Length: 480
Image (tube, rainbow, N blue to C red; front, top):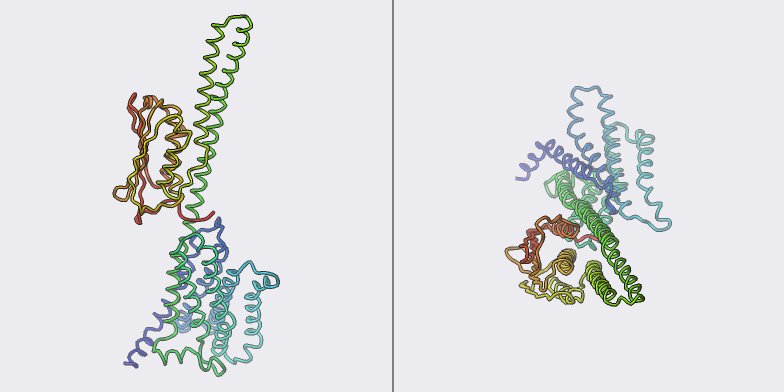
């Protein structure tokens, strides 16, 4: 049985080497195809080194497949140069892995900042050694290739693998864990374990040589003990690393979604402030100005003794001031901080009991929400902002005496409804900033908003958003 297994791996060695190289080439390709130029995560600045490691290491391993084939019909000099290029690729790949590990530890304090130049210094030292005394000591190209692989793995592969593993887990703990992205943190930790394993299998398990520790821990000894060639272990570790990193790179999509959401929210706030400023200038300010003119007219008429006409103008001024007060209360309602309840129920109750609403209309609450309902703070904020906008519009424009604020959950969908008994919306209504703002917020939550109005019989505004594990909103738990 043992000989059968050995024969199987010996017969399929080229296939194993090809798959091994392909795994690392795919790793480099998967990282390189991601776009993180605008990311603020420190991980984004370092991944180019890991991509370079994947590309170079994959090409190096493919050299073990294609160079023997080329040797059958190519001149010896060309084969010689191919072996030299393959060895340089191996050293360069480990230097890139080492550099990725160093960059993952930045910022480095004090003199430790010079550590970032260590991989390049070791690579240069390796090149000088291999191309000057290395040829003389090795004797032939095969021995030189053998020695170069061992020295590259010991000097750069081992520290690169372990330092990269530590740096990746450190970044997962320091930069990703606070964002509550547990699945991505788990993938980064798995990638760190794979890199540590590769530090052992790719760096410490080297071709056999007559010096310590290569005479004890080497590829031949490993295959004698486990029957599996070291390339199988390296390929499996590379496969785990590739899978974990591809899954972890989702953090950049989450970050991008969060930044887009922040931009949209900022634009909504800017638009809302511009609208309120314009309404104050064109509406409320003009109303106060007209009231002031009427009061001056009252003053002149009272001086002339025209009490009846002066009283009439005074009543008109009072009416205008009352209208201005109503408008200002509505704007205060839109500008005031959102309710600070820890859940949707507490927030809706605080909103319904707020003075600026109660002073104008009666609010009836009908809440049928499960006690274990869990919503993200950003979801609660958007829902409360929609309710606040709708109720403020009722207080300012609908001439209503009652608002019914209701909310319920049906089939993984949460509904929030604001109904009033006012005059309804005009048939020629032009959609303004308020309704557009509510629709934008509903869209950010992955939901829809519906407005139904009957002239003289009130208006109903309803927003439905999906909730539950099956839905992922565009507002992820990411700190900005």
